[in-house]
Image (cartoon, rainbow, N blue to C red; front, side):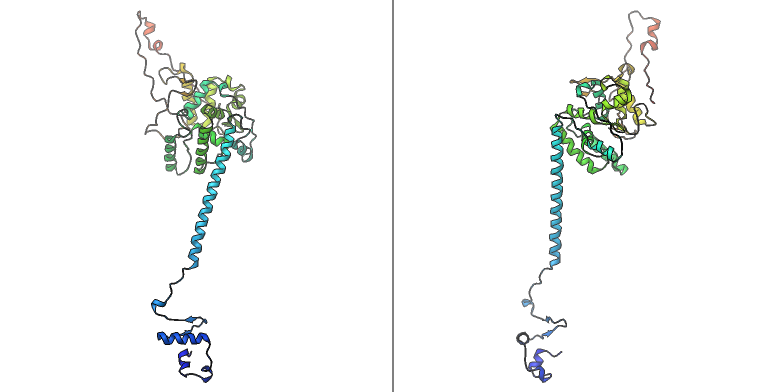
Length: 369
């Protein structure tokens, strides 16, 4: 290709020396001023070579700016969706919980899930005021499900930490360390699918329950809507199905059996524990406390303080040699065993009174199915 300068010098064909376009004249002027060679590139654009101080800074590539702006917009949209979900969840559940101070829930999410997903026939719950539930039955529930119920604010961080350690070892979210308040929260508003997302939502609702309702109302909702079998919700409906009596007329052994199966109410029944050691230990634990005459020299009888607020005995931490189980699944033994009574010799001892059989009554044993 013949350059502009060659054409100006008279080199090349004559026809190509005649006329120059303004662009060509500009190229020639720049070439003469800077001693550079200008030529057209193969694609028709000018390929120039200027001194470094005259070379303009390269413009930023538009692709990087677009990608950065797109990422920021995506993050803002995700944050907006997350905030909107929290506001909707907290607002909806708070309004419903506030209404439950005065009215009974007509249906719970768990009941709807069992009817829709499991296709079970749901028996209508029979919620009753808490005062109609025997005091010993309330204390039995608290002793095995959440012995800190009247002292925490809906969360038991020690139980949650213990459950997290167990789940980490098992690599599966099996145990949740739920309090009674958290159990009411998931009964009312959540489905029975174990995950950390459900646990997070459960914590939010549990705090709302503690703020908007009192402890007694939370316990009342538990007895009214807890799952006690396939399509069976509430202690009143369970007592009438299994024993044909209202909850207020339950015997202590019947109550112990109903409370014992709460850890697995779908798989087992009050009259059949199968091979579950957990249920058998829960039942034995409750039987010793609900029948003090059968527990002399063993565990102390259950005591209720403050008008039935909580049981005085609290389970201790499990020993290192025992298998770690979730707190809500199995009640540990009493923290301090009652020391044996010292026999005081009577004023006039008789041979019959000196015998061991007469000094200590035999401990009753319970037959577990």
